Image 1 (tube, rainbow over the protein chains, first blue to last red):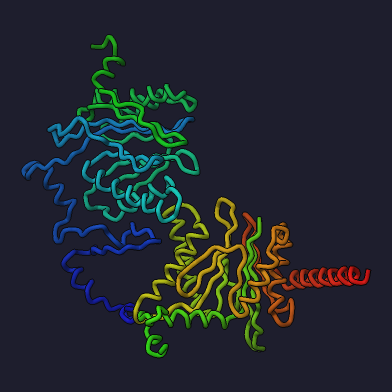
Image 2 (image 1 turned 90 degrees about the horizontal axis):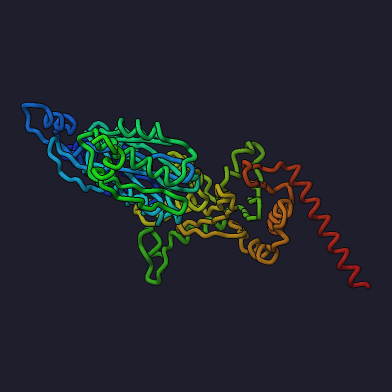
Length: 275
Length: 245
């Protein structure tokens, strides 16, 4: 009611504040204002416990070991004919190999892709939420969301839960009115625009390969080969990456899935004579 | 009958009216006239300047940046503030300036919310919102107290809006808006229909593509009014000659 707003009286929220902790649950539909800021969260934070402290206790020796799905190699780079996105497909929980066939690229819409690295659960949840917001944007404003705006939405979501133990290293790639777009977003709220990124624990190996083979005027086939090599060599050396290389090519008329090739076959092709 | 259903905004009357909203629209009709015209490369907003009391400072009245609101100026200030914040918020999150349609939709949603809450009254303002989208298309939108909005090629609000709109319907042609000057003159002509003492009581703002808002000085308006008078006389002369010959 208007009067309660004027005098600042908030009867309900006071009590729920104690139950839910400092950030409150409020499912408010705000059709014209992006609610992904620090004010309104999607769900409540558990009371009492501090999530990042709790997670630390799970990982250290002596405590119960709960290893979340981590470990990956993803890479993306812009070149003359668009953006190449290549990811591996391994999910590990500590030393246990949970799956060798995980899909680490989320197809938000025909012009937007998101990659996932870090905690699989976090990435899958938040990027699906991002896909929902992108779709709503398209419905409300009659035009597709720009890559900058999509990455900013994800970044604001991350900032809303900063310090609570999220682990997300994502690259948002797309093609919008400004041309090809590539943004790196992580759980601290870092958001960087760039020509080439690689994330995950195998990123060092991938950077080495892609940095030495990259030329802006590569042909499409050369770019595919470079992406494949980057992931393959990273999976060869990094224990937590493996499985298959999933590669996408973002073009002006949308993305296409280029290939899904097993790294064990690729590594033999690239390192002939070494085995 | 109306008396029983017009006190609270949230009560429909048996024949489907929201009387408070309609009364708000009446309040709008008491405000000074404003006209908006969408040209090809220019958008024009013109208002009738209310005569200012002798001791009052003139600048605190009338034209407010980009948007023209009619009637309850106090209400208008609130809405404009929210619209400004929303524009910046949009720029921050989406890294692109708002389209005219977006901000119109925001203002309209805001107004509609006030027609569906208890303890509040509707905003007593109609707005003409003009501008260019970032792809260069000129736009003109109108909102009213009920929260609806429409796109227009040319429209008028406020007192005598009907007269001005009829004039525009007759005279808004492709040639009438062919050039920037023509569009401005059309706005002035439309206002002269209803404004009492001519050019002195008209205030005009124009936006050309990729240029900031410009409020015309009274000298420029006087010049244009003089041109219009001359054209009128020439027209009258021609007609006379045709009749006599």
